[in-house]
Image (tube, rainbow, N blue to C red; front, side, top):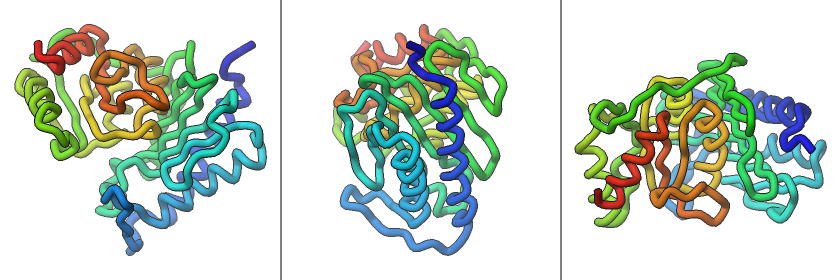
Length: 260
């Protein structure tokens, strides 16, 4: 059986379209910003965007499971499970910067088999499907060769995400070896890795919905995604992420994080 039937790919586009309409309605408007228990911000746009996607799943794929940042989990034991982060980069959203993204993932028997990174304001969409090339706005995209840390352009959302002394020290080792670093990209940076504009993303303090949708996008473009130990991301995995466009660079980053 085909693991990701074309009907599911079309449905993922429909989900992204629906979430994007919510974002366009609220972007650069005076929305109220609430603080969640983990101190991260959330707005009506986050909640409505996830709600509209969940409603579509309930109507058209009621047997599927859902894991969403804003409205919880349902039927995670299902064969297919949708993973939603309606606005990854809410801080960018509320500050008027179009560097946030909607993340949509699909797990088949627990494995990430499809992912979408959608930036509705800029009209940019990556979609990765297991066994197929990643598409950026409908055209295949590829990561760029970068075999060494000394040549790498690294992106990280914030140095504050490394909570422990050990995490900070590990990240500082990588940071000290790359050519250049930029900050504040959230999931949008992973799309830029897939498109060949960035080389490496190293992050921590993530949740499954921050990571799982990225895996098919980056790996379908030629890159690698894992936790800091090199294990593939999963629902219960360590959510410290290394994403690299070049598998050789990925291996180097893991070695340096481990103390090499």
